[in-house]
Image (tube, rainbow, N blue to C red):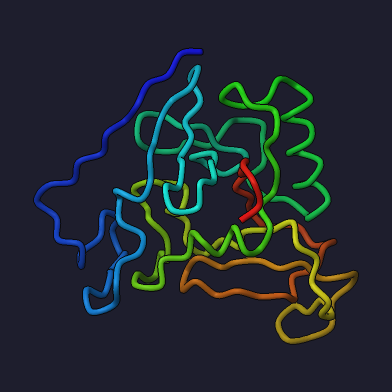
Length: 195
């Protein structure tokens, strides 16, 4: 197993400015998501992020993207947008085809796990964008594996099918009304014991 560890040092930036353009963090709110919370490493060419607080290991980029240096780039011929069922099936297909970073137990995170990435002190990208560079497109909805008991809604109107819990990382919004049938959501995969 080939492992490369990335140590990320940020100098010359104040935390209130953030690393990404347009991300601002409030220094008056406790920062529970500092760079030191995350351990970024490369295993056989695949980049992963271990959350030292939860013990969960995340793929560094969303499905449909691949890590290139310290960013994520779109994989030609793939899609970054999924329905709930497609997301669950994509995780299983990844595992069935040899996995990622030498692991074959990747899955879509449950809503509790996904919300551990929400940095409530930052906006409009409410996550550690150093550890998770896919957050560049902050208007994305991120799927969880958790079904929601609520009626699926779109723009406040009833939608088709059952709902699923999601996180919108623009402002850390959590919703239980995203239709399991609707596409357009993105997915981070995780592994480790349920948090």
